[in-house]
Length: 121
Image (cartoon, rainbow, N blue to C red; front, side):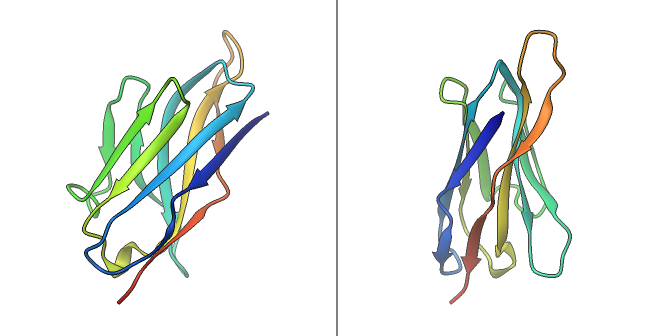
């Protein structure tokens, strides 16, 4: 089994910054992609950003140039630096990791429990 534990959510005023972290632990042989999704009240979960094992990144248009995703492979941790936050960024943020639990085994998606980000004046 693999566990993902998120931290760093909270409340901030518009224009502020937050940094989310998500650490994976457990039966990990290798981690392929990692990333973040978010879900606002009454809306579907949407992709925020992803990062590959070689640090290739992909962002939703709505967060491009404001958010930065990164990972520390030695710590099995993914980060999301969020700058110039807007009220529409308010959501529960979920991290995920594509984890292989053994040589030759295909990766499986594991998810964190979610962390609330609220942007309000």
